[in-house]
Image (cartoon, rainbow, N blue to C red; front, side, top):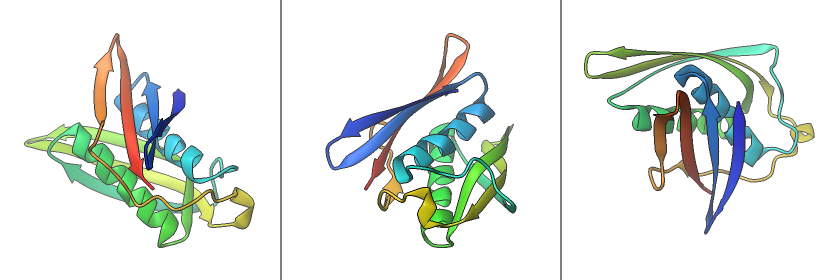
Length: 139
């Protein structure tokens, strides 16, 4: 799993890569956490489940990250680990994620609010047998 932060005017982004599509979405959580926290949790005692659907993988990744932002900033739940399952269905993709995390804590070193994940500069694709994504966040 690889995570690289990107500088972008008025926004911030990251690139991730993984061997599988599920691994890519798990890495995207790590990318989001790297933007938001200095010391994010690596897992946690609390659990949450997510089920999302989208017509394409770009939209699915945006919805997934926006849901994670909502859980962190509105519900005070910081997921440190995700087990993700993605399956193609008629007309789109379904994601199921089992999140493990902790309540929001000062010790995580919150670095600032993220408004949302954008479609600007978004990329999700497979290259050379590996999955890659580029994400820009509105901060």
